[in-house]
Image (cartoon, rainbow, N blue to C red; front, side, top):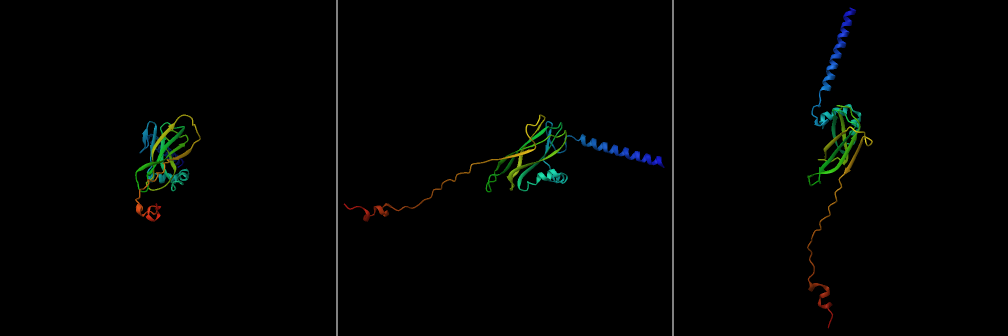
Length: 197
């Protein structure tokens, strides 16, 4: 009876090891990750709403980053590198309509986000948090990602936002027509006011 139990336990341990090994192998062999776009060794993806909801439920850090997003315009990007990075720099642009009456899309501001080192093939989710008030039709786009292998040149993580300042248009003067009195009706030229000779 003891030998049967021993064989059963051995079978379970071997099964667990094989299963774990195959799962781990499958995870590491799936590169590049599904849905990511590549530029050299750097990979990036905008997560779907469903994916982001799942990520937020698993990460307290992401939930803390997301707190400002109901007030300010935010973007989200996932980054990874095949060889790892010592630090990252992500530049992006906040776009929105020119005015309430003009829906022409213009740049409202520019963001620069940095983050620290990541291991090879580690996927990191980053919130791009602007200081542009959240309004309809405002989006974060024009995302440019850099993975550095050199030592950091500044403290990370950081986020800076530079609002585009446009001169306020000067109102165009309007020409109005007015009626002025005729010379004969002008008090200075009336017969009673002219000097006598």
